[in-house]
Image (cartoon, rainbow over all chains, first blue to last red; front, side, top):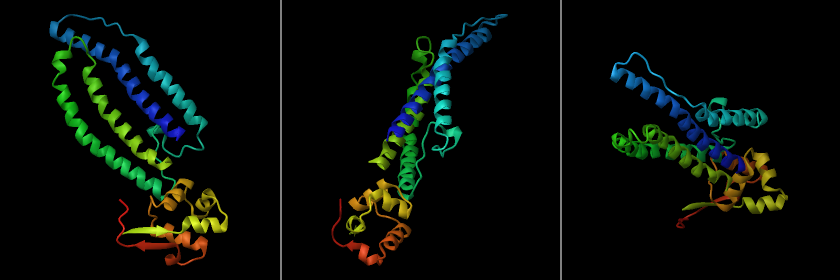
Length: 155
Length: 71
C-alpha cells in the first residue's frame, strides 16, 4: 500500500513538474511569436533554469528509487513511477478494471478540457501556461482514478 | 445466486496461514483473504488448485447458493 501511495504521489509530482518545466519554453515561444508579429530583426528571452529544477530533482529521486528497487520492480523503466500490479489473477482483474475506468474517465474529461480551452483568450496575458494546465488535467485525473481503483488490491 | 466456499475452514484445518495457502496455489495473501470473505470469485483454474491442495472435490469446497443475491 505504501508503494502505491508513493507511486501516486510521484506520478502527480511528475505531471506538475513537467508543467512547470514548460513555463520557460512557453516564454520562449511567446518571444518568437512577438518576433514574427513585429517583424523585428532579433529578440531576447530570459529563461529561468529554476523551472527545470523540479523535473531534475524528480528524475534523481526516481532514478535512485528505480535502481534501489530493481529486483522488486517488474514494470518497464519507461512507465516508471506508474505501477501495474499483476502478481495473480485477482490483481490482473482489478488492474484491468482500473485501466478500463481510467480510459472512460478520459472520455468525460477530454471534452471538459476542450471546453476550458475556450477561455484561453481571457488568460493569454495573465496566465500564459493556461493551455498546459488544462492539458495536464487529463493525465492528472486519469492517474488519480487509476490509483483509487487499484488500491482495492491491497484492501 | 452466488458462490460460497469453505476455504477459511479448510485452511484452519490444515493450520495454514493465508500467505502459506497463497504460496501453495500461486496467489497473494490478499487474494486468499478476498476469496474467504466472498469478495472475489476465483477462476476455474484457481478453484481447482485450491481443491487440489485440500485434496477434496470441487463440490466439497465450493457451493452455489441460489436465490441469495449478495448485493
